[in-house]
Image: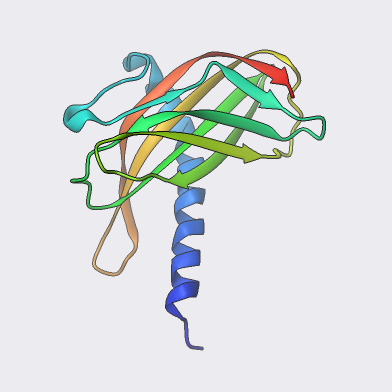
Amino acid sequence: MMITAGRTAVALSAGCAGLLLALAPVAAAQAHTLPRGDVRAGGDRVSMDSTVWVAEDGTLTLSGTYQCSADHVGTVLVGGNVAQAGRHSSIGGTVATCDGRTHTWRSTEKPYITFVPGPASGDATLLELRYDDDLIPVLPNILAHDAHDVVIQGV
């Protein structure tokens, strides 16, 4: 079976987003060591807004800002997580534009669990995926992380 470049790109993108979601607990575990809006060498930073929006159908929208330098050689992803009353969901996994400028990010998704308006916790992660010669992702590199209390509000 012949695999086209388009299918390969879609498969890699899906794999990267899945990896970001799978690594979210790792980033959350490291959150206690990083200050809010952590800035690492190279000026990489990410932040998550203090308000998370929930639509009537349960769709969540997270947003914030990020900045990453143009010298990253791998794919850089930005995404977030929300936790409330023992429930946790990863939302998004968008490819970041790394040009040294500050950009906004927004991820909207309907999680399989229900969140309600009220207090919660949230975090955002800026993650670089580097590839070996066979285009297989190797160890991810957390560039920046932001974790803090948020408020879920109805739309």
